Amino acid sequence: MLAGQLMDLRSMLHKQGVIFAYSGYVTEPVLSGVGEALKQKLTIDDADTKTLRSVFAIFVEQMQNIIRYSAEMQHAPPPASDANALKEIRYGILTIGKEGVDYIVCAGNLVRQTDVERLRERLSRIRDMNKDELKALYKEKLRADPEEGSKGAGLGFMEIARRATQPIEFDFFDVDADYSFFALKATI
Image (cartoon, rainbow, N blue to C red):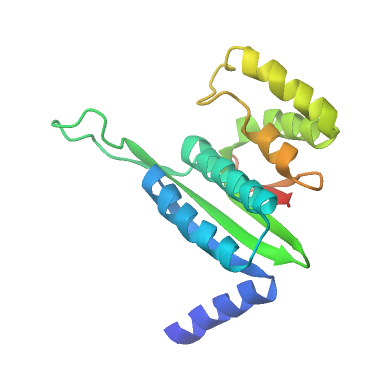
């Protein structure tokens, strides 16, 4: 039964063109290790340098969004001897696949319902911009102070959209009154 269930999952992913899948708690060391495996796979696939860089950059941005913003997390009390030790880990899912000649990077994680409209507005604006508008907004954001509540420079979604070869796609699925599942897709 166990082997059959895992084989079914593997077959489903394979039929969808998924060449890489990760679901679980994400940390910077996980990001680094998975990133190395991804680089090797893209090299084996003989992806051109620009494609390799774009897929990898989008992968990193997607994973960092999970690390920083997933609402599904576990807290750990830091050991007294290391004030810099990991205080929380966050859960998400990421897949990389191929559709014809394109690479597809999809990621998902829980977000608070209170954040859905803000995210939807921001992503709709970014999705609807052309490359020149994205570049101008990116430069503007580089010079500006980070937004309140941001754990980065607020450039991640713009970086994903700039590197994608088609408009980004996103969706939200209501889980309950407090949470929604957020999914983002980039095509390279």
